[in-house]
Image (cartoon, rainbow, N blue to C red):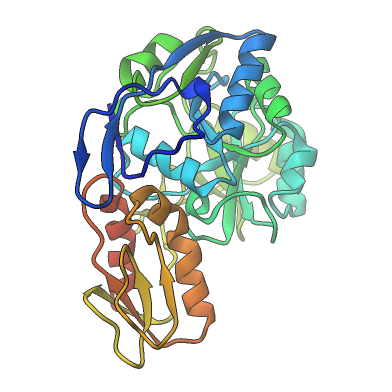
Length: 353
């Protein structure tokens, strides 16, 4: 079972098959909900059902040539927050946006000549490129982890491509397993880890590659961020030169999955666990906000951690853009998605170099 910090909605699609409430707690209407995870065949009906699920903000696992991915609408911050909750991720790391073809990728990221050469040589396939994001990239701030870069892949698996074509927008899809567990290469693996935590799984048989995609950063010098299903030597043959190898900094906010690097932080000073805001501070509230004459943005007026996670990076950016020099942040519960929210807020509040 997965705990969603959210009020129940009467308009949830029937595909969710939400079961009885197990528990209610406090004024935030915290509930524990078990999903009846459907197993679908990789035919036209299954693809259509999965596309409807994604459109409704649900979570659909599907096969790629590398491993099974856990898909969510990349542009829907609350769907991405539910994905983090289902995987049990303790931190908001950037996710790979999967698109149907290179034309769709051009709408998401900004390609330089090297990126174009690699895309032409290896897409569709097990290669992820990290690029500067387009202004209207269609990927939520939460999926980007607040960064100005985006990781993009065009998968080769026919089921994945059919789903992406049917859905028509970018889909974030980290490996369909609990965080820290072995990546799944069959529908049975996915169900063993995520049954009751996600809406459906498309069974497309075993994955042919069996390891995650290779990730190359095209932000400056081409750099191998993660070895994977595409050998480094093949990439270097196309480029005609060696890739740089990523160093691993001391912090743990990846520039892309599998790589540790700098993270987004506002220019303003950040004060955590604030009960109120001073006259010179903007307020980042959660739940019932105290009276404040200055700028106030509320992560979730109803105290919903899924909503708060979806708003986290966009609200921090908006407060920073206002020109404020100081931000007071109200206390956020540490349970569920609150752990990851507090992780990112702690980084934002860390002393500036």
